[in-house]
Length: 230
Image 1 (tube, helix red, strand yellow):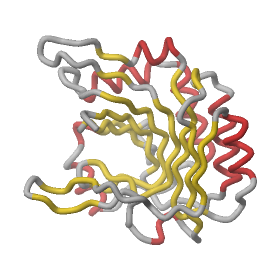
Image 2 (cartoon, one colour):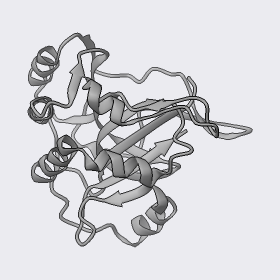
Image 3 (cartoon, one colour):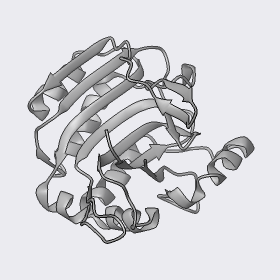
């Protein structure tokens, strides 16, 4: 697969019950902001269940090798798995699945060209391969970053290429400077606010990846921006 970089806005505390209709509403609001440029690779994958945090089993299984934990190419048993060519079809699909969700992955398409270009790192002597964020997704899962579970709900921008020589802070600064992203920060906060601060064990775990994390609102419990590059 090659190197891959993602920037995720993650809700870290106990998640609310979320349905397909809830995801349809937030996806519609994100689509209306103007961040989606290309209707390609749009996917809806849903697994029904009472709560997202019923357990900490992720949708990507891992296996132990000599080099550590790596993802295995196994299919997850989704209840719904469909591909689409436009956002309206994605929204209609989500609206027709009202049960509460245990896991979900919804690809909304690709970034608008000017935004994708702004979030592209050109080839560099230290890394001749470029990096470009292009894909937009919503995820309900046990979201892990370098072995640390960060949260349960995420808005993700991702693409091919390694981050270096940029630092996580370099990329976060670019992402958060975008007006459309600032609107999404407020939108997600209003829809699913964070009411409680992480507990002691959660704070200890997050400290391990503190150089990759930036809270939306540093002075109170908040959604977290997280950079992941592998």
